[in-house]
Image (cartoon, rainbow, N blue to C red; front, top):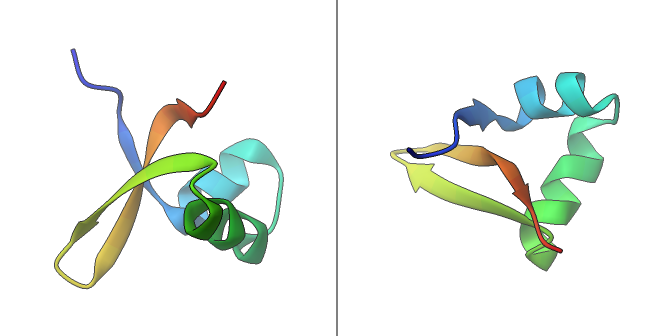
Amino acid sequence: MNPPLYTQAAFAALAGVSVDMVAGWVRSGAVESVKLGKTRLVRFPGVCQ
């Protein structure tokens, strides 16, 4: 089963951090994400070990 996908804003709210911090994690590869059209979705759990 695939982990759920969240927008960066929703993921930030769940993680209790800013959207900018989540965007940084996405850029660095710390969290797994996929691009769907113009929207970047973050996989949860997608945190690298």
